[in-house]
Image (cartoon, rainbow, N blue to C red):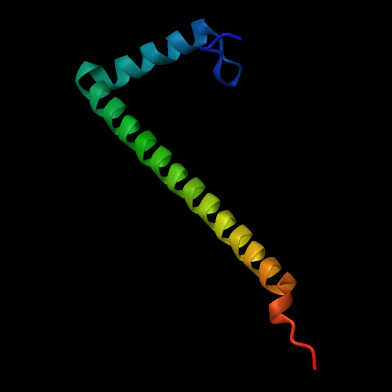
Length: 82
């Protein structure tokens, strides 16, 4: 698969789009746009990783709580007969 084939666009179409963007915004603005895009992607990736970590920690807590309940309920010393 071609790495530049985003959304069904081929290499010539992507090059044409980049040329139009370069002509519209100029060489001075493109690094600013790229920097902003990079920072945005970095923040998105950071938020995604924090969300995944939170899900994993929550899952571990739920599993450990379930294990604690099973141990407590199957402990014969906790069941006192009358």
